[in-house]
Image (cartoon, rainbow, N blue to C red; front, side):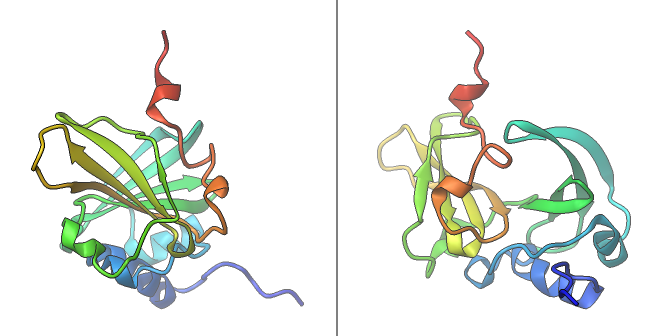
Length: 172
């Protein structure tokens, strides 16, 4: 009998989500397979539910406001499954200590005033950090978005279901 690939209890789900909720980025080991039912059993009903685009495709975004350093999570759902989570409050740049170099640095997906935002992808951690690099010399970098995905083997696997470069969103 094949093993169930999904986490099916609240304790395990909480353990998976804990590092991002606490902005403990070096402890994040990637998103496990979690169904909406298990998410609801763990976190309850979301504060907000809306249809959004994630990458090139539609997704359902569930917003959970929580009394944690992250402020809660935006959880992205497709086919009754959690595919990406995002902290509502990004971690400080110091949270990157110990991560090592990213697997890849992708072009920006979002715009931030007075900065260019690179997407730092950590494949084996299932981590994507949006790092704002100021146009003004001498200004520090800043994490403006922190997202967790399932660990992947290569940057090429971070594809259109999760990522869409800003230039691809622009219609001329």
